[in-house]
Figure (cartoon, one colour):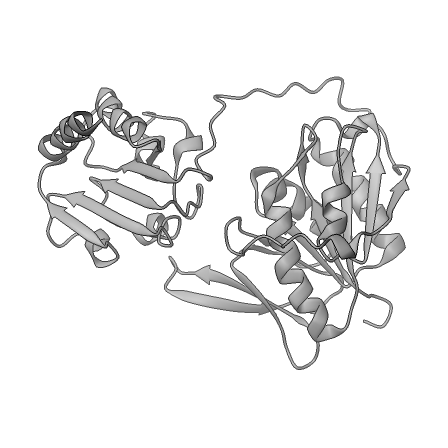
Length: 325
């Protein structure tokens, strides 16, 4: 352990934009660093289009910017190879990565290459009396919280998006950015990389979410809920069942295996309230549930509930809102 020091946050970026989960990791990492009296480092991999200046105002001790056009597209092998070589040289005690789609793909590759443990999708992190990282994550369908401690160093975890507040800007904490050359710039087994997007849709920032569950009978009925979401300035979400049925893309999925949301208003339509779904929306400010089953678990966490047929309730809501506009 004496050979390792500091917490390293891998700062994810996409087309030059830094993912907000990185700013959330900063807040928690600073808390951990204070308990261990250890430094906090950032590692950014990207091309010259990334503006890392904002990161320097977040209370970090050092920013490493590995800059090269080879990082323009998210390719796990190149990112993995460069990160593990960086870790082997600088020896951080802890590595934190956001549990985004890319982070969930990248982190296990890094852990396997370094032959260390990895705790995925953490919801909290703590330091024990020995100064080691306690990685906390839900288990057994969110019925318990597992507390995991790694034997090896560096310790490594991915942390779910929307778990912590973003770090505040402090203009007195500007830090010099250290630009590094990449260790590896190409992978011979890859001839080209092309990114395919099903749709340009991000539900995680929506202030209003109208979500559909198994109560929806057919795909066309989603238009009704989409209309309600649009009238409220929100977005359409779904439970995993509708994604598995092929009714809609997984960008709309909310739950433990999907997206986590914290809207001001969450309207659950025909959603029973399985623990996996509740894990993704339970921290919404106001939850309104519509379900024809009065014993549905979703009512246990709802601020307002209506027992009834969504095919009767939702059209009435739509008409009332239209009259008010």
